[in-house]
Amino acid sequence: DTEVTQTPKHLVMGMTNKKSLKCEQHMGHRAMYWYKQKAKKPPELMFVYSYEKLSINESVPSRFSPECPNSSLLNLHLHALQPEDSALYLCASSLNTEQISYNSPLHFGNGTRLTVT
Amino acid sequence: EDQVTQSPEALRLQEGESSSLNCSYTVSGLRGLFWYRQDPGKGPEFLFTLYSAGEEKEKERLKATLTKKESFLHITAPKPEDSATYLCAVQASLTSYDKVIFGPGTSLSVIP
Image (cartoon, rainbow over all chains, first blue to last red):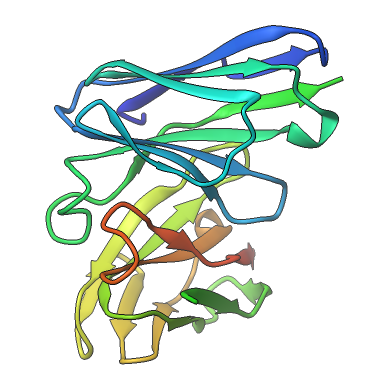
């Protein structure tokens, strides 16, 4: 079982809906990430939070809005999505961003499978 | 631009038939190279981190090696349960601490 928990596991939403994806970790990690993965493609970085502050936004459309309420929680708010946004959304965490290589690799959750109709 | 490529795209092996997967990278200052395993519908599972050329890591039937331009994941006497997509990823020092860039993956099927 993964130590990064994502809910829901599956989500179907219309283009006018507003929904949120949730991610939780209790490993004391201070860096959290959102990745998007399309079928048969590698994960693509969307956002990075370091010590609860947004440190990287990979030019993601504003219909995706991340939030980090505390060091254990990460949300991704969705609004007015397009069918091409359908994908597996992965949350990951690491001890911090400076020591990914040395002490703490990325730990991934099992993702939320999002379908936009 | 930092780039990670993997070959082959897909690989079918008979149970017990050893082989290697390749990961080639072009980055400005490698901080770390990672191997992950991903099963269908699940998140990537961490396998190894390699830091410098010449380094090797082993876990069960898997052995990862690193040179200045590429990494190999050697699979010895694979079993059907080794079937998965294997992802290589790098973290480069001159782009950003925060970014880990993934390669496209190799889909491995081990036939009983």
